[in-house]
Length: 362
Image 1 (tube, rainbow, N blue to C red):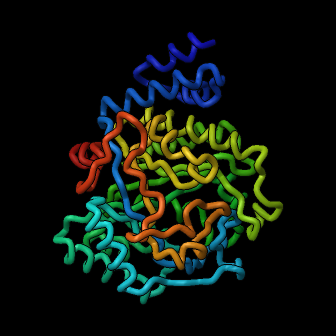
Image 2 (image 1 turned 135 degrees about the vertical axis):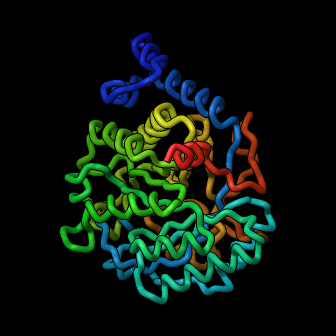
């Protein structure tokens, strides 16, 4: 059996059956998969790990996703929006620490005030840093005009997780209403790409109703959409949500973690030169989860720069590590040691070669 997976790993092009075989490989075969992914990373991207200082701007959200702890109908959450000064302080912390990039994340909000504020924040961060601090946005579904305004202001990456590329599965984890339309999700992802952003998406691994076929199709979706960056993590329940009302299913949490490692490895093998995030959710399940993700093909880490007093309000899932931690620089989860043999790159945006190649071909 090991020789079978070895033969698949040596192929230059992989079809759906190959992807399924890689995802379903045995525990004995998994190290072969992970080593192959690591070698692909080293060949196409080097041993570099890039940092994105995470700023959780607001937990106000108009969506009601069945898995998310900051969903609209969770009335146990203390809602907040950072002030302009708090966002700028976090951004300048990233700049002083020479992280190279930040990621501003929030719940979905389409109000005029919110859109204007994000644009103003992006412009001011660009001005204060002389354009040297890269800016990723993750504010969900917006209009083309809004995406365009934010791009023109100076944001250059946008992370927009599809969560499930299967329309049937998407419908099972979202309310059946006009606020949660699968095809609108796809439309927004396409607009983001058309507007010039380095475009990222991703999925949750281990969702209820999810099958191995769904995961294989997720990989194919990301390949065919030609994304530039990917963020994936294991599904972790939140008890104040419909999909987590019974609490965390610890029996299968480790399986979801291991399958996420395989998904990271397979995406790296299929999409050789994109950026892949080692998510905080991996660290939630396993204290060394992000390091293990990096060893399997991830190359981006997002230390949390949000003011510590707000972090408890941004628990999309329960058990998130570091949300109570604070030090002199107000950073949670920054470990420049990472794993042996890697180089943490400071002071650079860490753009993916995939993006420049995609734009050149277009």
